[in-house]
Image (cartoon, rainbow, N blue to C red; front, side, top):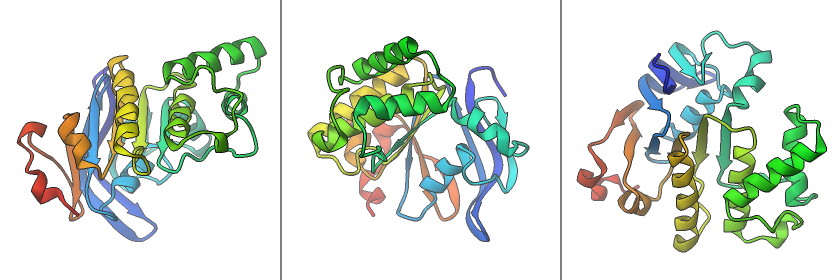
Length: 236
């Protein structure tokens, strides 16, 4: 595995319980890469993301993520792996009974941060990075969908991850707000982190072309350079 490789799957089988999702999966993602995952509902995009973050055990083949061997990882090591990953969900999954600041502080304390000054500084830093520098006191229900997603991205950045896994991060957002989220994710990629984003929004692929992997018929295939993709054949 090369030094700049963040994700490497070889001949991997992705399965949930006894249900085969994908087989013979080969995938490599390097630092500073932005990779789209596309495919129909149920084709395996989310299962692949959940395998990468060790939520679903790797059934067969080999897999390395941020230096961890998915085939040999122990339960107690999984939190250590996830500190090197940032997860961005479509449905936000913010704690609704506490402020933006307290949502982020909760994550930092849960991952071992104790110094209040350092916690305050890190929260201010990530909120500024996503354009939410003055929103820390707000409750989630006081924010728009786009603002909540920016907070989720800030949460994903807290522990300086090597890889951002974004599962339909613009799925519930309007086009203009989606553009703002893509700008943030692109900036994260430009900072040297890898970004893997599952999406159904093919307009984003046209507007922000990047390497594209397709889940289809239990296989993962790499599409031609984005400028040559036949978007008409990608419709659900």
